[in-house]
Length: 224
Image (tube, rainbow, N blue to C red; front, side, top):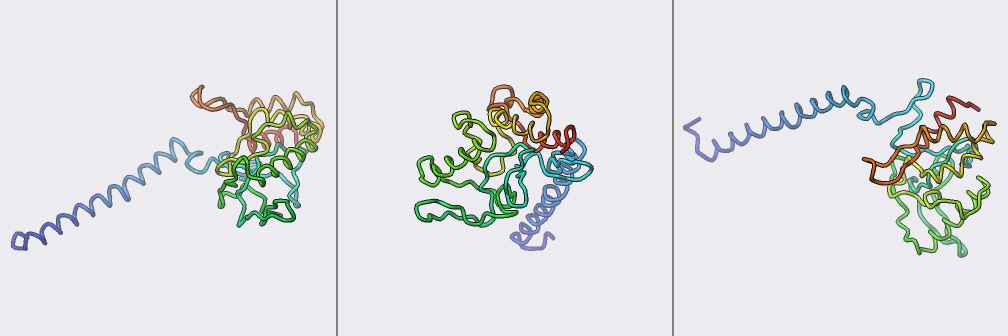
């Protein structure tokens, strides 16, 4: 090798270094991390999947719609935040009203492959219209005055996949869920409390309620 020109020897050394670090960082290191995560954090490493009767029903990290075949919310379930995670959605103004094209059965939001926000400003006429429409719909569905409807109930998250709702959002849904399942509001409130997560590190953010975990707990304890 010493008889080779210096620039060739340098390239050979560089190639050896490349191969060594490729094996270390591209094979050994990922395998170690995967093995460690499977042992120490198996649930999180596999997507925080939630099972019901030994069947995967979703992930605790992603929102999920609880609607019928026509896309109407089911009264026996808590409902998530609005979501624009919709396949190929677009906005259109029709006779002064804004509509979302692309919605329909099996395409009404919370699609993890199409995470997105509406990107509409607070003063955009479409956003104002959507918020008012959601307020009217929630007021009629949950039998609560518009003044008691929290902001997260009528606005989507930046990802469109937020799995949690605020405690205030959960509170306005308690009576409706209790009536649909023929149980007392106190029984529903107890499950809400059990599925409420406090502030991160005790100081960051606000307590939130995981919708999928809460609805699974309702089905387990008070099936319909």
